[in-house]
Image 1 (spheres, rainbow, N blue to C red):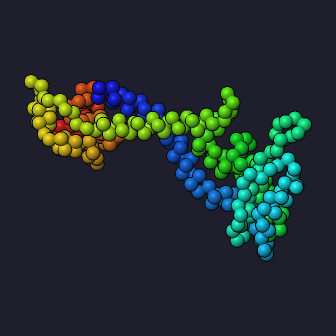
Image 2 (cartoon, one colour; image 1 turned 45 degrees about the horizontal axis):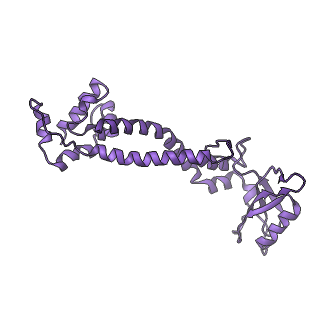
Image 3 (spheres, rainbow, N blue to C red; image 1 turned 180 degrees about the vertical axis):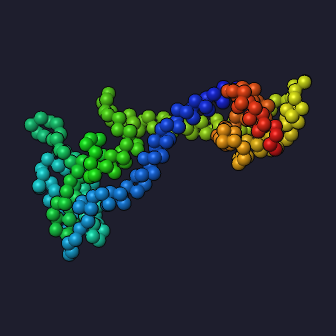
Length: 257
């Protein structure tokens, strides 16, 4: 059973690693999405005018009057000093076709003091990637992978990442299980080191799985620190992938305590 879980843990780790790397890199960037957007698109966010701000509800009416095809679906009520207000819009239904109008934007920026339009853009657009939508491109890439709509759904990226998250969560518990020391007893004729190790108590046998090696060759340190669960005493050293790995595993299991 342990060897089966070991293989599952290995392949699940390889499967999720690429997605976790991808999510980690994009997530690290978009954690600064507002700051990066401000730097790249000052013309959309910075306001130099002063005076009493126009109520957001009135600005919504102004937007919809200027473009009757658009309907505002998201807005902020109170502007920050020196910054614009932005609104998300959705196309209305065209009575002639019973389908939505085609808009080349879904976000619009207004000066809250004057109502002047500062610009518009398509938030999250896949192509072309410009300075206006670069940050939103990464933001949407982070959780949808920009997988296009098919079979009537545009949420396949979120579903895939959700499945990966479930696999990763289960794999964490499997990894924890693999760190637990084997319950096997030493067989007759077993090496003295194996017999001594299996004769120790639970905590003493579990301790090596949580130790971190800091000396030795780069290969050995990497092996020791990335597969601690694979070297529980007496259960998988013989199944390690190569003679060199078996040697290192045996050394970790029975010489570090």
